[in-house]
Length: 185
Image 1 (cartoon, rainbow, N blue to C red):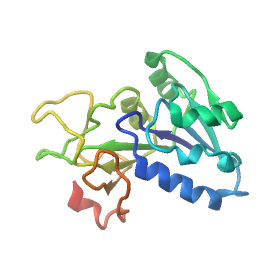
Image 2: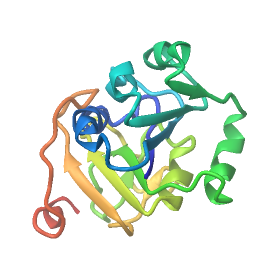
Image 3: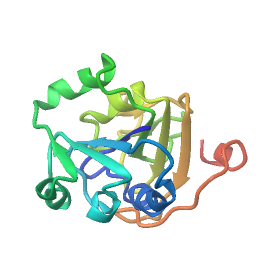
Image 4: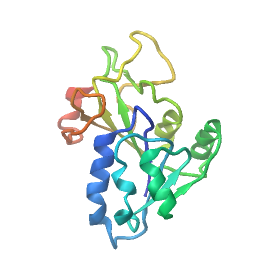
């Protein structure tokens, strides 16, 4: 399984915490889960050394939450130009099963925004089989404008969850696909 985590201000902190909490249940159930990202915010709990046997971490940019794992050898750091990363996804060098992202609430036309974290996230969600999004009311969209940072109404493979109105989502209510999701979109 290959997972992409949204970047910088768009890091889905609630989802990365949930990923780390679920990690121990994956021990001994096959290959490691490969987690790919550029700079992320939050505690980066999935990068903690005690989960090194569960998650294989690949960083293309790094921040304070990843430096310890890189120094300990439990995470890889592969520096490269930001413009080259989307090509890794699009050309299949790094196939993605899941993209974990943060979006704005959908507008009246059903479009959500990636906010300030468009960078490589757009290509990740275009290439991932499934996208899991935290809807954060503090992510702002440009009303009426269509831009590369917007996601069309109910894209293929999208599962959404509500985030509390805070700059960094710290908790969310998981939604049952098909049951609660229509209220969001």
